[in-house]
Image 1: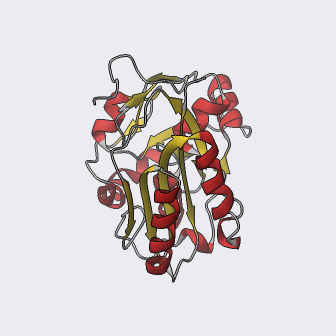
Image 2: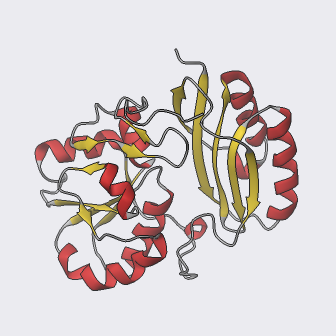
Length: 250
């Protein structure tokens, strides 16, 4: 097995103490010699960390001692090198910026579909009610270009704040279908699914854990090429290995 454990995780949960938490997590991560990014906001936490397995998992175990993070389930992959250059902990207005204050995921999630169920829907060509499935990619255009689900809807947005107006412009295309919003790890497609429900799209699910969880829990079928990730690995194949053309640059 490769020596470096990479984890990614998020949770929408009220964090009024985000500024204080920033200092605590910065100290813990630095003491454990982890590298990566932790984003904090009043709406929750989003993080990407890498290091040797024991300190990475010890960091998560300690984080779970806070009741707000007790159910964290990070997505895992392995690499030969740490794909980050520093350890950053930031407090931001949103852990994923949508600029749509009415969307508050901590007050109630949209329905989700797990990776094995989605894999079965795609194989049979419809959901369990017989309704056609529309895969909606909520990522930026350059991420989509690295790989996406077969036949996925791509509105060519360049940043997530463009998703709300794109939805309003294309909403009629989704009528009568089961819409599954997806993204890299789940955070954007969770907000996107909530917005679609608010805008009156009737049958909406978010892909639980995003593309990375789909790679982890299925054979990766019905997805072509790789998944762009925001670290030095750049693109991961469905095996969760680094794409040969996207090795870490020292």
